[in-house]
Image (cartoon, rainbow, N blue to C red; front, side, top):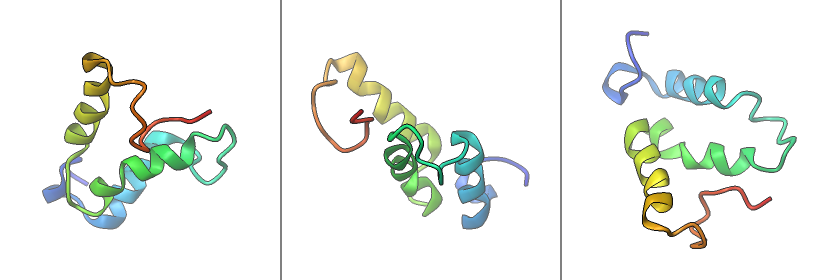
Length: 76
């Protein structure tokens, strides 16, 4: 694999990148993993780059929208 960009990876490689980055996403041991795995589904599906997803997530904290429930954060 030459990189992490959608154009450089297959769907299976993107799935593996997310799984390895998040750790054991199948265990759901702390209750947060399902939400994190879902957050990166657009990347896995080839719709948005990881950078875009991370920027959107981080923007909530910069703008002060932390109380806004958009289904992309840990509910624990």
